[in-house]
Image 1 (cartoon, one colour):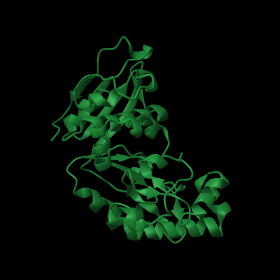
Image 2 (cartoon, rainbow, N blue to C red):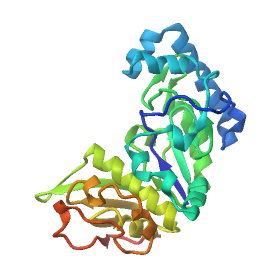
Image 3 (cartoon, rainbow, N blue to C red):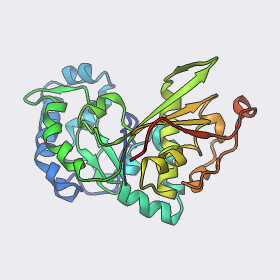
Image 4 (cartoon, rainbow, N blue to C red):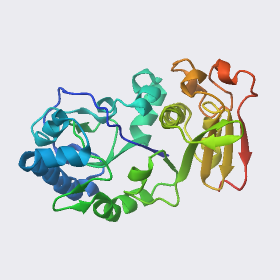
Length: 284
């Protein structure tokens, strides 16, 4: 099982690790593209910081981080990212078995590094998947030739990436997960719900593991009110606020693939039945 997480714009600053050494990162087949992008991003930050700031729509301080990419301290990737997905995942509170599974199964889909394992030491940086770098152009054009074959050999890939990051590597064989909120019969995508629920699903998969689409759907039962399976797509449907489901608790994932809810239902969904799985096709 490989679980692809979206990165987060929010990142912890600082670190105690030695400066970036691409040779220490997992997935060495990606090193040439990583080196090219690190050089291009750092050069853009040094030569035209205002232009890079405008392209990234970020504070000047984050451009300064890009200018110091090869000299600033590093920390493990799973500690570097601090957005909603990672808050919901709460890696520090995983069980020992969950931490071991996370180490082997979680990967962050990064615009700069391609794929990052939880312990890969990386500096703080800012680069979005939709950015076009001088001398590089489209990041999708740079990453697809190496990322797609790198991921093709994995039997079960659970894709939790957002659209721009999914464009960096097309994975028709992956399990695609969508999070939808249903209100008065109408389903919509709500950004915070989407991120929080995907983080909770990643946690459940770390605690319980998965070998098939059905296993992913069963893990989804612990974080959603309704789970629908259509081929290799799994829809997680919420009838209320995602964060309200567990009150911020961090033990939901320990239900893993057990099929129990594993969460405390918030007031908005207290009248609903336990999550169910509906399958529209085989989960081969």
